[in-house]
Amino acid sequence: MTKHRYLLLFIFSLLLTAVSRHYYLQQHRLEMKTGNARQNLDQIQKSSSAFFTNKDENESTDETSDGQQTETTATCSENCNLPEHAKGHIQGQEHQHGHEHEPEHDHAGQLVAGSATNDIASTADEKQLAVQAGQPHEQTGTHGHEEFNSKAKLLTCEHADHDHADHHEHHAHGQASDPAVSPGFVLLLRQLGFAELAANLLWIQMDSDSHRGLWHRVEFALELIPALDPTFVDAYLLRSFLLDEYQKRHDEALQILEGAAKQLPNRIELWQQIGIFCLNHTGRHGPKRLLPRALEAFQVMAEFSDAPIQSPRLIAVTLAAMERRTEAVKFLEASSGDQTRPLEQRKIDQTMIERINSGEKF
Amino acid sequence: MWDTFLDVARHKMLTVHLVFVCIALGLFNLFGHFSTTPSLEYRMIQDVGLSIISLFGFLIALFIGSTTLRDEIQRKTIYAIFTLPMGRWELYTGKFLGTLLAAVVNMLIMLGILTLLLYIKFGLIWSGFQWVALFMILEFAIMTGMVLLFSLTDSLIVCFSLSIFCVLLGSMAEHVQHLAFEADIPLLSYLTDVVYWVIPNFGYFNIKYKILKDLTISPSFAMWAVGYACCYLFFLLVAGSWALKKKDL
Image (cartoon, rainbow over all chains, first blue to last red; front, side, top):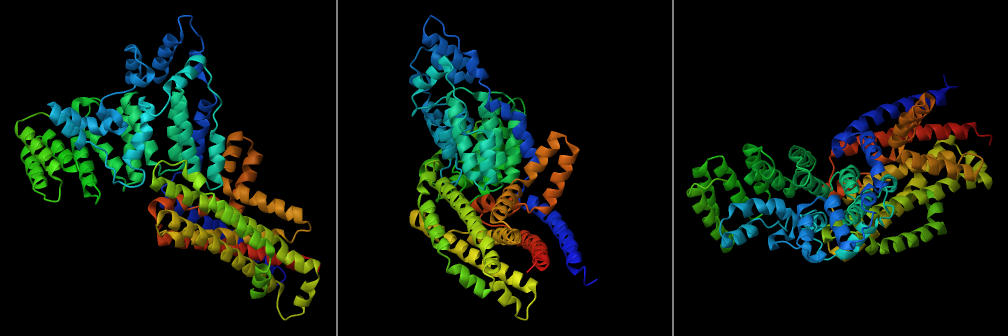
């Protein structure tokens, strides 16, 4: 027995290690709220070819003798498939001008968050107020809307700071280079402990790909980023926005946000966006309206200490849409009576009360 | 243990490492350019800084762990120690603890430098510091145990190669297992399954992104991590003591 003491101890310690590892892994997945790493790798494998194909460029490599502008217009329309993008070309404007929109569209987030309240307004003044109501909350901390919006500009063709002519020359001539940040590279970075760096580099790569119209890569990157860093809120928001706005996959977009909210329940942006999707004012997110869920999401949002200033109005509008107008008015009256709210906001609250009382449909 | 620690502390290599770490951490401004907001920049710098500390911590554990016991054997001073009334397992455990202590002290110095730099740049005290430090200690403890075990091999190159290989494999254990499964070769799959269960998965000690975002982890999770690390260290110490006992000295 004593002779084999070390052997027995070795076997015992090996078994103990295996058992403790098993339970630790379970705890780890619970704590980190992550799935199996295999799922992530499956996802990478499924879509990795997207990073190494230039199919969108190939479609646009044939130059026409009519000049570059015709070519560029066609290419951008095909690749981007974005209404604003195409509109810019049709109007025969310079690229930079072609992507300029109304001031309230300066932030892509407002295309969703802002437009819901914007559509509610009827007069020009009200629109202005509504835009203010829909302004993204800058106080939401880390991955805030402000940051998201500035990045989301890239995909909504509002690149005020970029030289678009250059980008579209690339479109026309098919000069896309290989990706600088490949899935293998980001995976290696993550495994070496640089998860955040990997996710951010992929985000930058996605930005670059979006400029070149490589939307298949953009879509893939937006799937991969949360796999690398499950707390990268911007990726969830932008992906759901693109799915909803341009691919009309509304349910899927909502599912992404719901999944993200389970993962990151303390992020206001997610609750606001879920509420906006479910409220579905003017039916922009498809035929469905999930008003109870919208109300729930806005209420969660309003409970945060740094809740957006338009939260009470969003709750009231949802209540009005549910035909609980009395309740909505009472809620807004309480809000407008709150002396801690800015005077301008209380005025907007009053305007909203009048509109709810007038029987306007939301 | 203390003798080993003091012996290690006198090593010039540690000073060189610390200088490198200071330079690397000093360059952290470069990584901030990837980020668009101060909060994101703060987290990015933390992430990169912690990864640099992990990397240098491993190098320290590798260089110290691979030489401390080997030097005793090569200089024949180990025979003097054997004359003392202590078992070989006690010597091995003492060497391990001394090396670990040196690595931990270095790691804490590096973490301190990073925290100081973050405070200077952003004026924020780093919350969640203690959890990061705890998990890094666990990670380094296992790394040190592995390196010390491999240092009993005859060649220093073998020791280095095995250590680096195990750390890389341990960081990618799940993915390697998955790739083997996808390759559809039963023997390879079986082998990687064995490796997966024997090699420690360092990826599971990486709580950086959780800490950087949520600032804390649950104490029960930390307890499980400590439990697993202790079990694995017990395994490494038994294996190392056994190997030292079997060694012809």
